[in-house]
Image 1 (cartoon, rainbow, N blue to C red):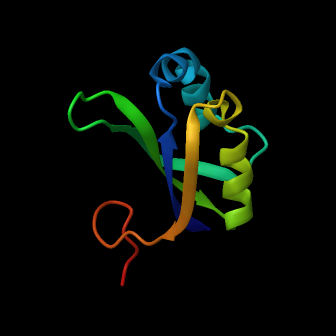
Image 2 (tube, one colour):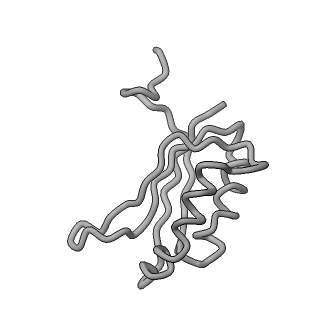
Length: 102
């Protein structure tokens, strides 16, 4: 299994929708169902000035990029139009509890 970092950015003025959908989003991250993706780390990104949520950072473990893309594409935030965009990249943790021995 490989680690992947997912950066998602909310659309403009989506905080109300984000807050409305957040319980479903969080429940899905805890129990992804049939997906072959395990969420290792998750949390909102914040607007530096106001400190309000404006996106998401996930670190997930999966067999391949396609599995992660399918997982993110069916997230409640995506389905509700909260995310303006998201980017997925393979990730290697170099320091901390997720670090691979080298």
